[in-house]
Length: 187
Image 1 (spheres, helix red, strand yellow):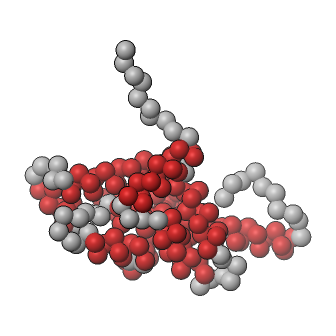
Image 2 (image 1 turned 30 degrees about the vertical axis):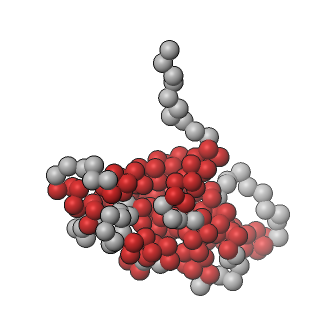
């Protein structure tokens, strides 16, 4: 009897699988949230680390993000194990500057929150904040590859940062009209 493969996961399952995989690669939710906090706290005093953590957690539960995180970590792992053939093995392992496929995946994740999400990702990708810098630096060590993971982590931070800005501004908009916040939209 052939066992059916599980291909679809619930949002809580996807969150837990992403969290576990990121932790295995040395990335915590708090480290990602710290980047979001750094980006947004300069624009608003109403930003808390808690809303940044909540935003990262929400993003890690999204199906598209689940697929990106799982793929990115697997590509890096396979490169570490020398499983690719031809020049792509060295290109990925060395994180060649002209190789932009990793950034393309990052743009896709950050694009879930529009152009601002992608702009936030550009800032993180160029300036290498927090855990992204640590992943990038560790990826330069012998036998370690974070070519894809550093961009996916940066993209999650960028999307979370954008979500934080949306939540804070939604709250401010409701203050202006003195109406209790109620929305069918889950930012």
